[in-house]
Length: 99
Image 1 (cartoon, rainbow, N blue to C red):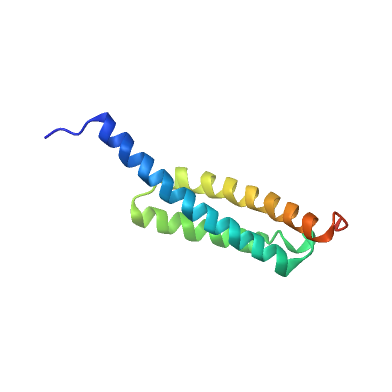
Image 2: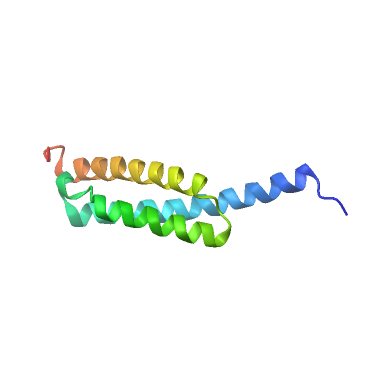
């Protein structure tokens, strides 16, 4: 039996929902990190960023995900997470943390 585009799209839609749930959990962790760090100067950790991208890329390759997808995707995710964490710190500090 041949698979249809409708079936493929339905599967992609289900996967997208799972990804959104996981991204929401990840965002909650970012928000908790903002509570712990309290200062913008503590947010960017280049060593940790390199470590995360390397781990994700290696795991992705093991799972059949091209590093041409995983590396730019996680780089963007990390950059957006940093921006979100900055906003969370601003909310917590009333906009007074300029570091």
